[in-house]
Length: 112
Image 1 (tube, rainbow, N blue to C red):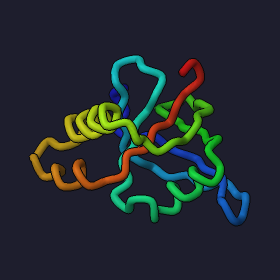
Image 2: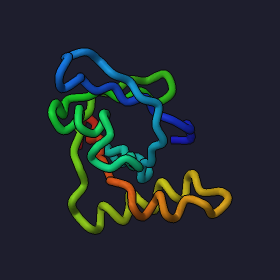
Image 3: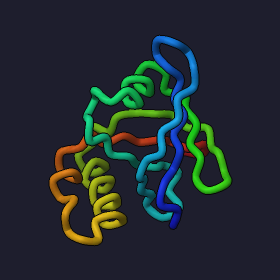
């Protein structure tokens, strides 16, 4: 997916209202999972919302997908996600710290 951003919509854990963030993402070919990195770790509102209510939507280009939010805990998948995002966005070699310290989130699309 050559799109520079995706738009993740979570449901507010307190309000129940939809909240949308524009965020960088990575995908391994046509695999049914998108990966995100949270520089704010598990303190970011979108992460806390996704943990509380894992049924989310994600828009890439003109297509919106239902997805299931989850934190990545498998070391191999964690490494893959970090590599995908750093390779996609780190043109100047300045994102290694971000890529190494951020929290890895997966959005599992239908079919996964």
